[in-house]
Image (tube, rainbow, N blue to C red; front, side):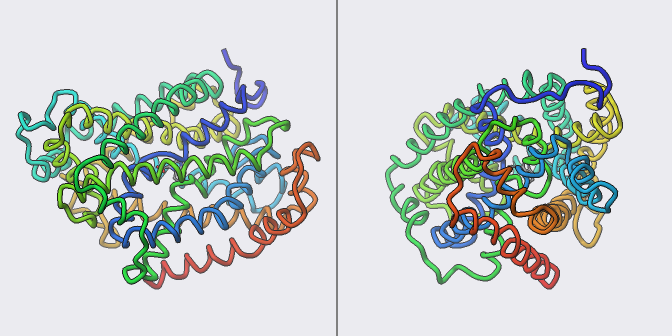
Length: 454
Ligand code: TRP
């Protein structure tokens, strides 16, 4: 049994593979399977993907390294990390911002996670077959506005998240993600192959890989950058918190690069699983957020063996969401254990009681509370907007400013090379340092300003 936080030995990951898969589990989520495909569809296909890749490699990977540096060097939660590395300064508030961002994201993320359970249950009941006879759009609207049922599934999703987190880092997070991520990968590849071999699928493949820059606008560029942040779990202290469980022997450059690569691969595979099928059935790709819950069920109903494909798809969606949700919850739990000296189970109970309220509000904002508008957004959209456009962006900005301007270049290189254990070529070191110190903060500030004007 763990003793009160602070005096107990910190939990940690047991293996390099465990770290990589936990990080990838955090990164791969609804962002890849739900958000990425519909954004690609709305923003002109391949042109969006190309810009997205540029953002990921040249900007996001160095930002991820910042979070790695903060977490691994401090071996503390998001708030504690800043407090430890810059004692007696106001920097710790930057950490608090990350904890808040994670809490906000988890609140609405659980609602969509709950929807994925409901759709998995329906898929298992063979609802998405010709015999099921469903009408996807009215069915989706009726479900999300029906108040009690979505709340039930949202709470079920939160409960799954809490149960894994209670077991801790090594026995909960690591064991769970290490088993699940390979399964998720295989299921996604199977789906992509099924989709790409449909008659008429080649047009969808062309859409994904043949750029048409005429549909790519400034707002597409912003959407791509925002999506890259969201998909790589940046700016919320999740990478930071997981990195704080990583030993000084691990190669954090390699781990950031591999996590980035795997996350992007998952997004592309999700695109290949969805777009070819959308085109094969003559549906417009720019469906928006309903793509996964409305368009796909319609396709499954037509597809040979669609009943099974639907089960595999919604199981993937649920598992991907769950491995991300646990990373968001761990940010809050690590904070409560170390800063408020709570025991892990107590921290989970305390945070859950808050999340239940917030998630229920988000869920109800689709139905009974849909008239409640703040800045003309309902609660769900407000949480999404505030966390993705404000808190996360500031979280990432402060992380880069702190690492780039408060830590010395020697500190950064010491951390990236694990005190000289790994080689970091000079030009690469210079590039990373330049991005962290100047390019990333400038781009993030531009993003914030553009967001305010828009
Ligand atoms: N990256 C996850 C996804 O793609 C979501 C997520 C987990 C996240 N942790 C995060 C997003 C931290 C932003 C910040 O679905």
